[in-house]
Image (cartoon, rainbow, N blue to C red; front, side):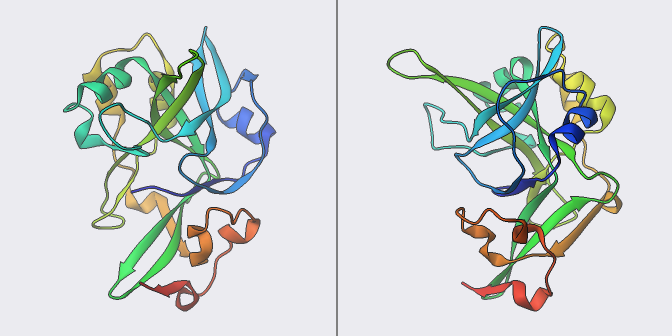
Length: 221
């Protein structure tokens, strides 16, 4: 499961990397993004790529908040399948965190792309209406089982060509969209130990992404 990530790119780099045409909401660097917070997303609207914010975590009528959607479930659940074909976005990311259990302890790790300072996680979204018909967009990150960290689901990472198709609202064929969601080769990823205090959602400083000795990353559970 992906329940923490960071986005540390400057706005100028972000707009260049993802060819963003419009910035619709304020942007700032984030070091410890947590579920239910507002997160930067990119979607294509009227032929333009727009950077805005959505709540991280769906609130489906049939269940609890969902911050991740595993690739294996996208075709099985009508709710997710409809979003896949009609409501897609990308979620820019500089690195995501993994809490690995090791016996009676767990340790915090940050996973980054070896060749890209910022990459795209595929997202799907929905819009929730309150009693006064106010709209609240919310999204979830698509994940899949990974060999990089066995027994853990990690975010799918889209390449440049896949981003183009993923953001194209005219593409509604689920079989085509599924072909974009391929596992990134392990050789393209790198991980390093970080502070276990990233579990504290109030901690939002550059220290979150600093590499530390693995022994300092362990906490008892």
